[in-house]
Amino acid sequence: MDITELILDDHREQRRLFAILEQIDRSDTGVLSAIWARLAAFLELHALAEEEIFYPALLRVGIAAHRKGGVEDETLDAIHDHNEIRDAIADVASHPVGTDAWYAAVAAANLANSDHMAEEEREGLTDFRRLAGLQTRHQLAVSFAAFEARNFTGVEPVDKDPAEYVREVEQGQRVQASGSLSVGSMKRN
Image 1 (cartoon, rainbow, N blue to C red):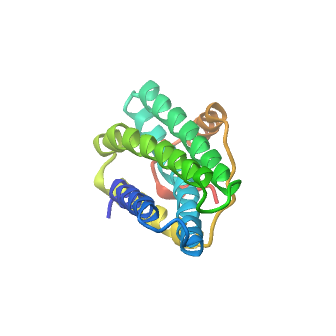
Image 2: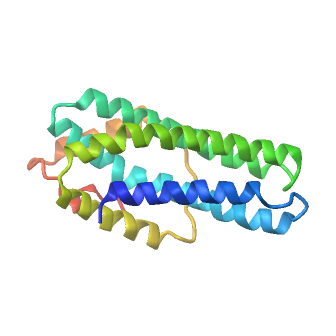
């Protein structure tokens, strides 16, 4: 098991759910509502799991590999993207299901999420595969899967200040005298 593969699996499921929404008759608002509710909750959970497990680890391995600037930029951008996705999800809720405005808001959420996934797949996940060993990626995958399983009923959407997020993670890194990448040191529950 590899955290980068789990994240890619989540991305595939997100794409699948957006595609399902596009194929449902707009008058079937009950089904549209159900699929959207599942997708919105999944997007929120996935973002939080990345923020709790993946991005702190990316920062730590990047700092250890003397690539601090690159991974900081990737993380800042990812947290900003997550905020945009959360805002797009909230916008969908402000429109009656099945209306043109609702579909436009869903399309905006899809675009924000698709842009984020593409960038993450090109940069963050690729860098992490290069910088982190298989054992670390496996341990993080276990933590990631457990986090998503423990929170499958949903998480509270909360925007984060990207710079403050990176600062908090890096301060936590400086506190660790050993520089260990142990999974226990990466959990913030």
